[in-house]
Amino acid sequence: MSTATTTRPTAGTTSASTVAGGGERIGLRSHLRHIGALARRNVLQIKQDPESMFDVLLMPIIFVLLFVYVFGGAIAGQGRQEDYVNYLVPGLMAMMGMNVAMGIGTGINDDFRKGVMDRFRTMPIARSSVLVAKIVVELGRMLVATAILLGMGFLLGMEIKTSVGGLLAAVALSAAFGSALMWVFMLLGLALPTAQAVQGMAMLVLMPLQFGSSIFAPPSTMPGWLQAFTDYNPLSNLADAARGLMGGGAVAHPVWMTLAWSAGITLIAAPLAVARFRKKT
Amino acid sequence: MTRSDTNAVEVRGLVKHYGETKALDGVDLEVREGTVLGVLGPNGAGKTTLVRCLSTLVVPDAGTATVAGYDVVRQPRELRRAIGLTGQYASVDEKLSGWENLYMIGRLLDLSRRDARRRADELLERFSLTEAARRVAAGYSGGMRRRLDLAASMIGRPAVLYLDEPTTGLDPRTRNEVWDEVRAMVAEGATVLLTTQYMEEAEQLASELTVVDRGRVIARGGIDELKARVGGRTLQIRPVDPAVVPAMVRALDETGLGGVAGATAVPDEGQLYVPILSDTQLTAVVGLLAERGFAVAHLATQLPTLDEVFLAVTGSKAPIADGTANPESDPVAEEVTV
Image (cartoon, rainbow over all chains, first blue to last red; front, side, top):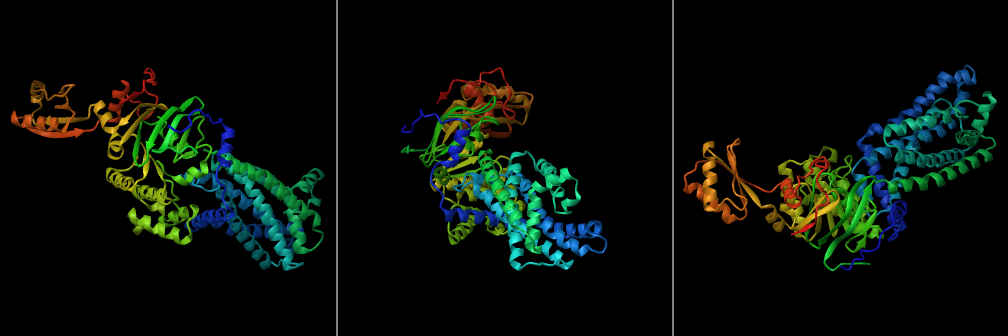
């Protein structure tokens, strides 16, 4: 036989990276085509299963009503709920990104149990395409949630004191941070054994981050040790940045902090998620 | 690049261990271009691990494997372009319609929109799924799903097709449908590596056979050679009157038609079994029964089962189903080339 039978491939992790790295390169246009085809798949899945949109359709409505009318009076003072809308909605934009991102972890975990993943992994496509397509579609879902949130805000008397540009910048910033978080949850979804485990783990991280931030109430009312935490909480930065971009005020610091967090999280979590995805057998 | 002239698949000393489990423990095999190799073995023999190694889903611990001239470890991307995989569990997206599944795969294989559309229509037609094309795959029957899966594997016109237990869990009628499709693909020149637990399936589809057990090849050869080794078919005879069974056995042995191993009577069942090595012998046995005036209630020929194949090549019973049976016997039986 002409085949060389003596070479012994290196075992374990090193050969896993060889699998990923070797061979012909995939051109950018092919890459985009693959992502498009896979994103189309994810959209068609939503069409087939419309209940999966309930979270992005209803969550913003419920949260705005709940916080404005149940806590708004206590936080901003009785009868001043409208002031609280202006405070709350930019904060909720930050939260929306996180909640939608959480869903991606359970989604990818579920997806992995299906045979179709094996098919993707035996096709001549970059393995990251599957993950990127998922992020693209989740970003779309996140924008739907944001649109509904803003609609609710306007209904309840929210005002944009800056400009449309400021509003769009706030939306873009929360999308950037949201997509960074999606990589984290994707990593969790790939690393943990079941969708339930992902959900439990995600809640454990989410609750303190969400409530220990400036999303719902000004940190100035919190004890000092908690303020120290909220100051470094990226969700506070994002909420403050969105608030400044929509309502006026100094934005440079929180905007830069948010961008730095987003870039940092993506740079660490995305390669880990892709590597995990490649190795998963 | 190491391209072989005649072998589409070449596997040398392939090893894959999962902890203590030796899923593949030095497997050698080759599939000639344009032929079907049946890989026969019980559950847990390493069949699926073999297919997963050959389709780049699993990286082997040692050994080499080339498919269509590409090395599984060093040239995975080129290799993926040359293969199609249909697994034991249908690898289609259940939430998508049949058409959408095929269109998506066409696009992932870099077909233009128009070509992807055309190819999807074409394959749905060919696998008799046109009527169900717009329905969601979750609503398909088991056989339809398997056919869609085969169609999906065919979109890129792969040089080598892996069928990993393609009919496990299907009813006999659906199984025949799948077999027909596989035969049609082979007629068009596809090279197929088929794994199965059923001797009958191997006999229907494969020309060559490799028998595996516990990650090792225990026998290989042409299907007819192997069958002859196992003893070919068995004729099952049930006379109307169970009392004549011994007389039948005597008659067969007297005339030398009882076969090498001799006819075996099973008085409890009121029937007897005759090993059949040729069609001539079969005809002669039936003729003898008529000549001697035995009234026969039931006649049937049976192919050797996987059990019997194992018995013949290893001298031990096949550890069917759980893969842990008979720990006493030596699993590393001498490899017999027939």
